[in-house]
Length: 136
Length: 136
DNA sequence: TACTTGACTGAGAGCAACTCTCAAGGGGTA
DNA sequence: TACCCCTTGAGAGTTGCTCTCAGTCAAGTA
Image 1 (spheres, rainbow over the protein chains, first blue to last red):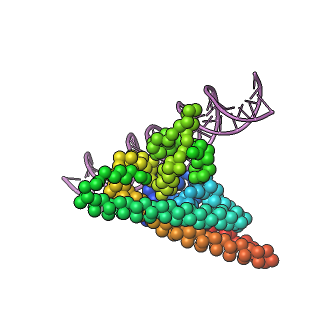
Image 2: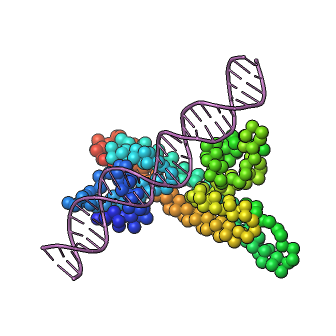
Image 3: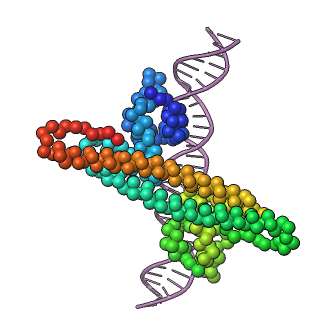
């Protein structure tokens, strides 16, 4: 059993966010002890993990709640749940592609600035030094 | 020269968002025609591209504005700009790793549901069919 | 025993970054 | 002239946190 603080640390999600997710119904029935303190079980960590996963791919909380509710209903919802996961995976793959593209741009910029700095070092000994490199 | 609508289509960013970014000072001096309509140049598209890139990696608008302002100041800010790009690139690489991890989970779930569905198909001809697969 | 400290609670204010609606003001065509 | 489509800025609304705060409780300390 874990307190909310421990879960926050373990899963790298803030306590605030965990409470917010809990209040939004994204974790079903987290147990409380006699002092009303949440007690996350190993099984609950699984919920945190999947919620975090879906969020990180940009799924909104309402859709995550839908998925969670489907899980609670039982077998009859397996096809819909399968569809959600499949669609989410495709979304994640697309994000991967997008990220790769943006990384290329960042690589290019980084090299560009490196060249600029290298040349500026040389230019310190060069009387002609009025270049304005305010390109992006 | 492009209208905001054309830029929105070209860069896959909504007109609303472009106006919001423009108002936030994320594009320096977009020209207007005599009717006060924004006219994006090829050069302006470069700004849209880098802003989109920085946003997609989670840089907040304030920091993007800082970067844009540095670009406008000129050569003296090259080291700081270089630092920003380098840090952003590292952040992007970390996101890539995180995304890979989440993709593994999604792969696992997808296979899990596929197995479940396959077995359910078989179970249609099986009198013992009361399994409750409400696992996540 | 009284006090302090630290963790947890829910309610609710605040915030970033959109997202959407709307009224107003062109320009072009029939 | 009427109609249509586009653009504009202002501003309301939304999502998903993020933070503050007052209150509760248990354990440790003087």
